[in-house]
Length: 183
Image (tube, rainbow, N blue to C red; front, side, top):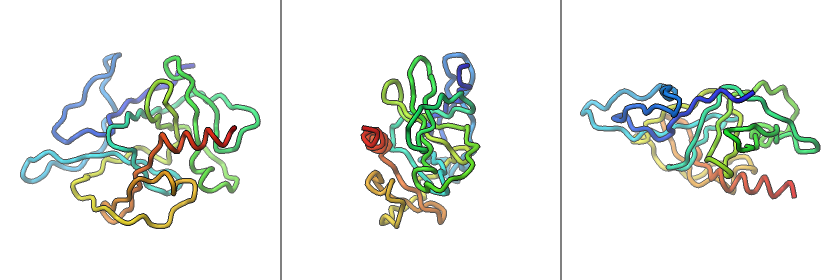
């Protein structure tokens, strides 16, 4: 069974029109900030929430939302590795960052995935909800606050947007680190 794909451009500006995907469908329309009063384009970035932590991928990183996919479990791996999905012929590992951040056993009904990067470099994470459009013109850099150890060395920057702290994560480095833990 192939996954139901919902591609999104995680760096859309308010003045851009949605592009169509190869099969002719339009990308997922995400809620977005209203146009600026002076009709100037806004710097819109998208963030996701995982285990109550607000995360941003680096600018220019390709991200793809998958509404549902069959995850094939792997034997003898930590609980934060859910398994693999087949995405256009590429095996993509699926990480449950919530389990990595808080290893306490819990019931995980996550099935919405965010695939980060593409091809052989792609990896997916489970999400608490849909990506959120953020008006980055209102973002202010912040010193990094206390955060889970699993994310601390892979956090590039922290931003405050509308009283919420957002962490820009080096997902490529995080995925390489997690892969190295498997030996």
